[in-house]
Structure formats: structure tokens, C-alpha cells
Length: 143
Image (cartoon, rainbow, N blue to C red):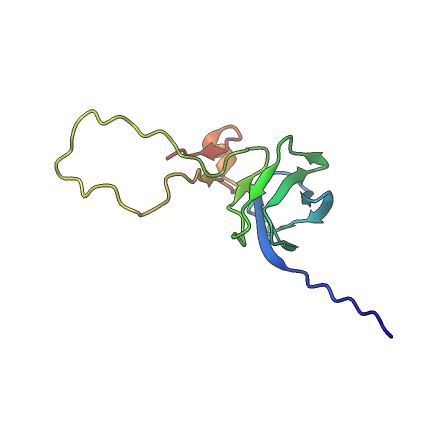
């Protein structure tokens, strides 16, 4: 008589993506570190597809051996992260709206052109960018 045990494991592949100005970037999931690869020489964006469980995933990014001081969470129905920013806890957040000081009658109203809870990042790169800005500046545009 043979005793055969079959275990079915369920997992999903998740695309992790982080903006980082470090050289060596990893993501830490369940106390295991996974290397992220820079997408090209010009963009400070690192990515990797990693097989994780089907539950909510708790993770942290590591930049040049320094782990973020907070945990991030990815819901179990998601298969990719937003472009997280290393060391910045919020990538998506309900932002306060400007008060309406004057009612503009010609407006087409609030549209769905973009998600105004997503905090975008603009990175300016190039040989003349330092001359143009005189100092190294990273611009965050809060919509």
C-alpha cells in the first residue's frame, strides 16, 4: 500500500515596479529578497516578475542594502504594483481638492482622463538637464 499525498499550491505572478536612484534594488517578500532589474540606463525604474501566493502580499523594497522602514501591501486580486517610489510610503492616495473660488461656466466638468489619486513622478535626465536646472532636482508633480 502506498501513501501518496498531493498538494495543490496556488500562486500568481506579480510585476513589481519601483522608482529608485540606487544601484542595487531588491524587493523583500516573506523574508526572501528578489533582485529587481533596471529597465534601461536612463530611467531609474526597476522591475521583476515574482511568483507570490494568492493572499495579500506584504513587501518592502531594498535600495543599496537599506530596507524601507515600512511595509507595503498588495491586494490578492492585483498582478502588478504601481510604479512605487523607494522610501515614499504612498503611491496612491486621495488628494485634497482645491477649493472652488469661482464657478467656471465653460467647463466640461471633471473627467476620467487620469486617476487623480495616483501621485506621479517626473524624472528629468540628460546631459543638459544639470545645466538647465543648475542643481540636481527631482520634480514631483502633485495633481
